[in-house]
Image 1 (tube, helix red, strand yellow):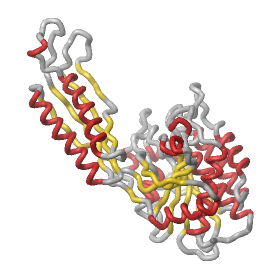
Image 2 (image 1 turned 60 degrees about the vertical axis):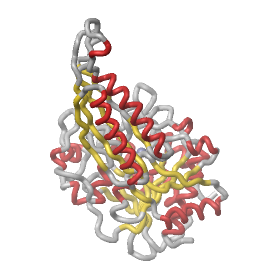
Image 3 (image 1 turned 120 degrees about the horizontal axis):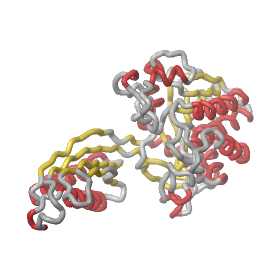
Length: 410
Ligand SMILES: [Zn+2]
């Protein structure tokens, strides 16, 4: 086999040492000592593989295999940080399959036309600082605002966290990639859903990353005595919110299998067993790979919200707090992955990503592609997250084949 499955799996097991949490999972927050330990281990493997290693001002780690020509590099990798009590595969699978693919090519002494560069992005998860995709946002120049304004829950600013991580204190925005620095970006990631498992297929070729729109809504009714106020005279904000939860679900179901709508947060005030809720705060998260279909779903939810307020004699407002455009994966990259799969005899299927990934940022720099790996029970952000050694090997093989094609080795 052109990739070493056992080496790949032993590295997965080794990185599980960094940040084990009491719940059986992994807690490896951005720029923490645990994250640093895992990153240093990968750095050591990169050096041993003969890659040129560097960190940028945002703490992203790069390991480069030089090419015959010094033009734009093919970048591949993922992240090593995790959510609190997360699993051993989210992010890690993408960094280690990238290393395995590039290392195995280096071992064969085959020099690609283009440089191949393995990356471990910092702070993908947004679990320490309230912003995700941090490292790639600095590389791609999409970080909004001032780094010093970003604080974690303990009040540590991002520049202080960077210094504590051992970086020089340079502004992380100087990590911005130069024009033409990258030709392509490829990321292997666990699927985090059930489609591949349900179809018995090990790998997916991602067509794009869904764009999201998020709203924060407030519903105002009237807080009254739960015993004294008759049912027909109530203005119950929570009963209205409950209708909206179901309306959002229905709007997504009626839209398309690729549309998602979620109410993830509902706060009830005053929040007492014997008081009719007078106020509710809630969130709506709507996503789709197709932007206009997402917007149609979102506008139906907003219309139902207005109609519901009138019908139930409530007042309130819905405010947009976040929006991002969908990212299309490059057709040429998808074809390179599929050709590699056909050559290796590995079945694949095309599928969209509902979750956001670093590629959404890197797409500002170059065409991107992603390979999804089958996740047992569809689980992620969970200690029970699991992708088998065989599926990891399949992912490394597809990635290697795609790198050969895009990097001028095939
Ligand atoms: Zn991830």
